[in-house]
Amino acid sequence: MQVCPELLRILKYLPAKVSDAVGGFVSTISGADRYLSEIRLRAGAPMSVTYLDRNILSFGGRPVVCSESEVTGTLQRLCEDSVHTYSETIREGFVSLENGYRIGVVGRTGGDGESVKSVYGISSLSIRLPHAVPDVGAEAMRYVTAGGRLRSTLFYSPPNVGKTTLVRDIARLLSTGDAARRVAIVDTRAELYIQSMFADSIADVLTGYPRAKGIEIATRTMSPEIIVCDEIGSLEEAKAILSAQNSGVPLIATAHADSFDGLMKRPNIRTLYENHIFRYYIGLSRASGSKRFIYTVSDAEKGA
Image (cartoon, rainbow, N blue to C red; front, side):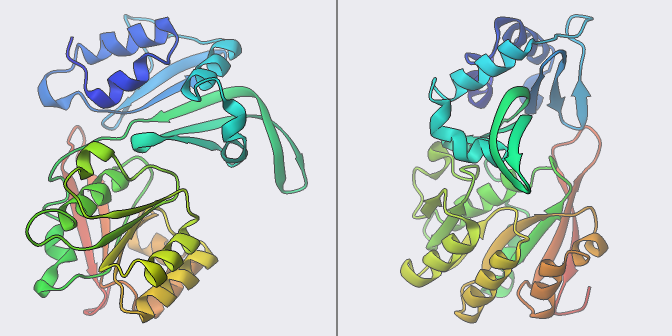
């Protein structure tokens, strides 16, 4: 069975029954469409894989159920038996591994008011599989480089449509080749950068920096021609973006929203819009069963 490298790296960490179920499902998918975006383990409930726009719950005609100890053991293996090393981000709901893997982690928590002190009794793991999809960003480049200039562009969609995959490739395209630009990638959750994709790139990668601080540092110290980051939306990030734009550094970013109107209901994004930060606001969707993006483009210079 031929399995994509991104999936192969993860299978060894999973319980044998999960690995067998995932591998068996992948063997039923033909050709280049062997594209799983997520594997989700649940304690005492069916595991699932997300394939294109479907959640697959049945494998060989039956569900696969993991115990809490199997889910916890999977997290320990993913963390190379050093869960304590990741305790700070686990309290924030995730673990990031090198080369773009992110694992969502939830369970029972001990906390104080709004803060989470610890997470235990792990109940679900959401293993997001990064995908190196060369040239998936080629079509979007006509907006990013419209008129021969780098244009600040915000891509938005609901979760799990492919925003990160898209901007990862845009960063690669911008930072490689004869016309390579100095790209600063602010990779807060270690999801954007995949080493094999950027082997010939002149991108500078700020891994683990909070977005606002990463944008500030990149602008102040790395003289980037463009900054790329993922999932903006906080007040601190908006302030950092405003400062970077006042310095003349364009930005490629993503945000969660199901429509342009929904995007504008987010107050910090609205502030960026009112300050003319992004030239293009591009909504992403995909036709059922397709990996090709459908773009809904709003040109801020011409009005939304």
